[in-house]
Length: 215
Image (cartoon, rainbow, N blue to C red):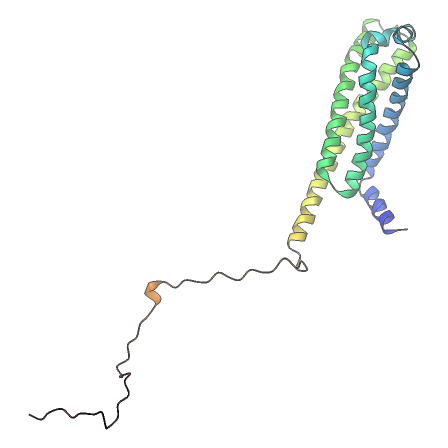
């Protein structure tokens, strides 16, 4: 196995829970994206209302295209998040967390009126719509758990990134990390002592010597 393969295996082993969650979430999003794609491009508004009368009352046909675009972005974000975990880039991973978080909010916005519709009609609704409401409920609950796991992974990545940065800064092998010379100590004026010598600094010999006058 190549070195890159070993790194990928290590990353997956260290983040098993996250990658399992990511795969499960991606599968659900792929299925919903396929449904949205066919609802938009393989039919029209009247066909959508005819075959999905209850769902069309909650999610109008004109909302399907923005939902489809966001689903595609969500899928791309999941791929990017896997790469971000492997390369330990928490800031990019945080952006993918935001995308999934907004997706969770959108799912809740669709789920609340769907469940209300089912309860209001005493579960006497179309089987497809009932299945949709049940699956969406499970998806929202799972997404809440997924969000907790994502934030836990983000926190782990931030700690790992900080440890790596600290180890690089303290590495003795870094050629640029040259220890700075200690600052020169300025002596206090009181510590400076000045001594005066009593010896003459002039050289004298017998020729220049003049005896003092006698009294």
